Image 1 (cartoon, rainbow, N blue to C red):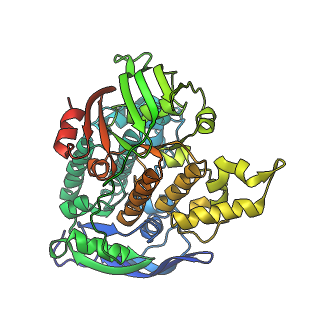
Image 2 (cartoon, rainbow, N blue to C red; image 1 turned 180 degrees about the horizontal axis):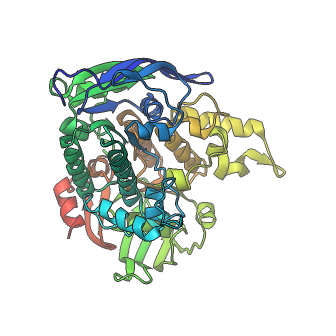
Image 3 (tube, one colour; image 1 turned 90 degrees about the vertical axis):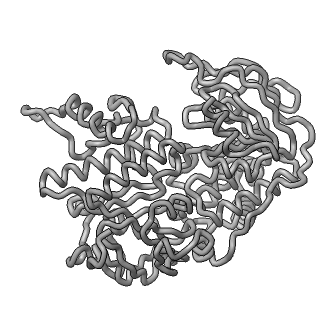
Length: 515
């Protein structure tokens, strides 16, 4: 950060409305050249909307933004990129059926002297981009086959490539890099790698605007912290003069205390029992995604699945839900009876519900509204003689909106108009309306703010006390420690540890995850 330098960016009275909803109201603050500014706030506070305006995704708004000494006038994202502004979105902006290299060069493809797309050159340059990211991703691989963590790294490489293009054409690389929850799907080692990359970029004079709910990341890296609440700026503070508790209080307008969510829970009868479950991995040197897994889950119990990325957490839940890439081997029993699911519909009817890790690809239907999202899996309960009762459907949606405190302009609001956290609440509501015996939660608080996380933790505890059996995965070990009765640890598809409440610590879990 350049001490005493004039602001690089000034937001002056920025206001944005989506019909009757005011997403941003008179937002004014500045960003200094070369600084790491953390932008904090609950889901729905306006953080992503503001950054979409800065990056040209949204061009219709009131107020103005000054970059350097010139008003910023953008007609789209390409204008922003040419002004040296790059963004890495929380909801990844990639084309799944294209290769990694094709995504990085999308819209700016390299061509041969004869005008044909030069795939080999793009693949070679993409591979060169991944070198400083300290990762090995095949540039020819379709993006849809990558896990979220690797897709996130492709987004970062894409932004870095745009910076290189600017440097080639204007002699100056991108000076402003916006990161919207960039670590939400990364493992601990990948996060450390990202921070090393950010440190190198800052040495080159790049200004970082960083959206995150993770206070440890914010207080490790930020120069200053700007807090938004309900679309308004609450305060901007120097990181050294504040605390995580103060920032959290400014974000939610109240203190979020530490709670013991699993105290005095009494598990009941066995709901799920798994014996020698294995999942083949055809064509891979490891041969098995999962190997010889044994576990059980009882009524009123939360069982956590820990492990590094690639350990098999998501694949395990997919086996229980009939969504695995191959048919699993071994025995799965639901309430004492053996079951075999070849499709999620069968699992759903048997009483198993899944909240997916990747809500954008597998959880959302962009043409549906809030009510439709909530009731989609339980329409039989809202129907009579084969016809859907609008009144019953609306009543069901209203109940879920109130119970999960979904912030929405109404039941008919587009699901895409909601913040990421409120979208996730709608997906959880949809699962709960099926009245499951077993609820599978795959990293359910990814990209959700501290206030919403606390609400979901309380919801998990309440559901457990009502007798629901829950399996939850998470990339955040403190989260599992907070909500689980038992935690099972996977390492490269094998079960390497099992710990009960009172036994588990982050160190023990990490040791088992790297065994």
